[in-house]
Length: 302
Image 1: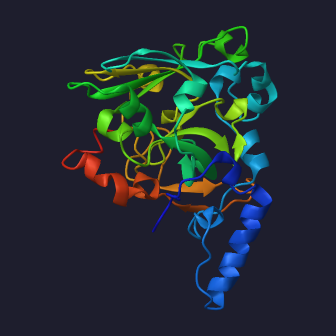
Image 2: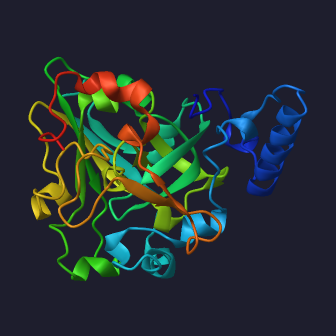
């Protein structure tokens, strides 16, 4: 089952929310009448991945730099200045440097991909992201032999991020991937949702999306990317390694110490009555990523 659209698009080609959802309804009706498939990015998601509304996606967020409440990011993130923006790329690369965002984006083909984002709190949300493969950026700067991991860092601006005053984590927020995870075609650098630029609460202007892992791995508002040989520091593992491992793959067989991960609630238009569903291994992307962990004990390497 295809879970993302591989067609090459510009940001202007991505279908707006209302038309997107309407075309999906037309598609469902056509299939029922035996009329076959209708081509186009609006039909990228299979029937079990119905995107949440733009309002829901942008008003129910985890972004602790702006507060720990789900509504806090939408309420306070407007203070973050996202233009101009630059990303420092260093470590084991051929072309280290501080790159303006426009240079990072230059020549990249924007795609629309519909991914399910799964959070450890037991909820998930289906989101139509716009962005490009992380591998395209890494290839452009030249990954050196011996590099095994990619480390990421979020902006740390106390004057713009009121949540930094609370020492919930060891700021700045940091995350990391193994290099083969980073180079996987599913791993996305997102710049928009529903064809619109990312809002601050969703990680503007550029964030990571790793759809087979829990949401906290998909670091927001990236300012630094480092290629290195050793496993990088990651904020939630540092905060509580018993609950948040480095890999953080969605695995319904491994319970969070305080709750089960066997089921999830999909947040749609009305998150209060969303039914629970069985959590899928690797968030449903096992066909694409299970081989990355062949021979590993995923109960220990959580």
